[in-house]
Length: 314
Figure: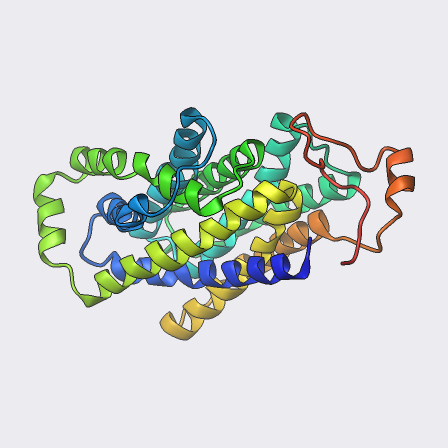
């Protein structure tokens, strides 16, 4: 991956890390699914009139929107609303790296290496330790919803990778078309119209600022860059940069909220991050010809380079 793409991936991870505290701050008077829907209304208008639709089938645009936006953020916002600490959420959501590798192996035939398989196993063990060692103030349901959000994100990663849309921003904006109505519909069913009206009536500057941050920085900038990188590089190369998300998220939660992890959560978090690191560590590059001769570099069915077993420096 070129250096400029590496730097963009790092910046996106830092923006996404601070996102958890900012979302949680905006949730104080707003039903979570309504708040998530508002985010994507802001994403859509006026961008939908300025950004060209990606040259991919509508079914793929809808699938990306339903997985990466409706499912991921509907579950995440609800998890935070139910008491999931923002810093812990930023950590747990990184299990999507393991989910992405597993799903890419099944759906895209991007075969994981032995090292990556070990990393996935370590990460999943760390996740179990986090679940067991979490504080009593963290509801199990909130944790499970956060895991569901991670699985949805991983599914969105793999679909975006398979589609290979050249315009990441276009995919972000146009896939947002399918987001507000399902989220608002669910909010009407689960929260009721009175709660939605009350939340909108009491929206303040914190709610507005949170919505603008999540819409413009996290969605338009973040996912625009992210989907572009996924279209140009294998999923197992791009998604590991989310390793930096919990670093930013935990630091932001500590500075802004004084949130400190329990000993069990900290230990499990270290294991989880080690698992992610082992999954994605890349050593010195082998010559491509040699790698191809021994089957270390292959092509996916879509013609993109598949999961690269040989490790490299660039």
